[in-house]
Length: 143
Image (cartoon, rainbow, N blue to C red; front, side, top):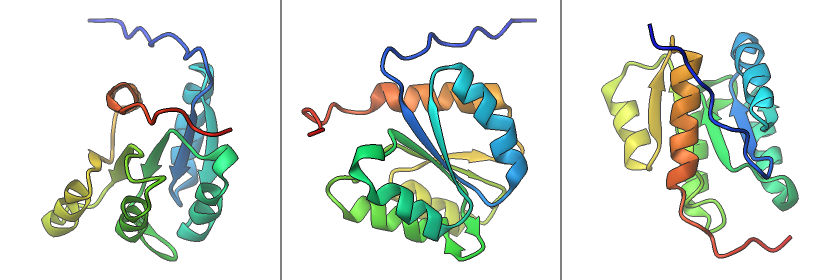
């Protein structure tokens, strides 16, 4: 059995926005992400996610996005993100129990990675790290 060794904590705290209406997902992932040095923002619906994403000083480095939310589809938020220059390249990992091929194809076409529920937190964290590693430098954010 191979023992999981978490990656080293980032030298600069990275921000993760977790958009999911299921409280247990946040309870499961938040402590692990915080232990790895991440700042975690939680949004339970599209409205909260839009508010969190509208603050340039707190914009996340990656979004974990459920597709089925109480006030709409995560695919709609994903389209909005891809339509704005400041979030076009933002890594998004769709974390969903959705099994409908058409919806998953839409998310993939919008350059999102897919992680189906149920999932292994270790695998999701590895996917998150890989997404951040692939993220192209933005040329420096004005802060």
